[in-house]
Image 1 (cartoon, rainbow, N blue to C red):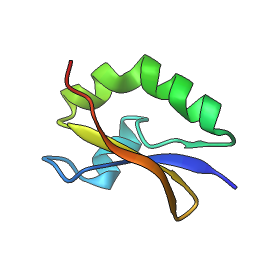
Image 2: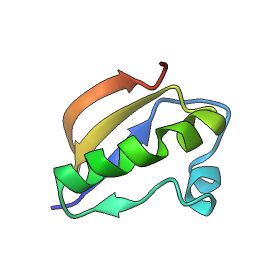
Image 3: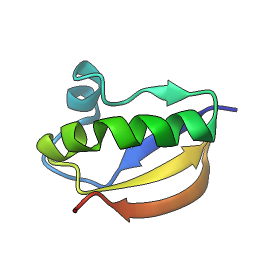
Image 4: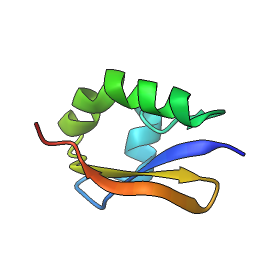
Length: 68
């Protein structure tokens, strides 16, 4: 199964995030969480305020705020 971060709606499209390299798919929850730790500022700059982690279609947790 794969993991992905799904942002709450905002001033961006999924295509915007994908073209910015901010919509990857991960093989493990640990890899997804590590990526978020590295790229949360980039997501914030795109207007993302909250994300939820999904394993396939199953919500693992979230929404989680990206505010500091």
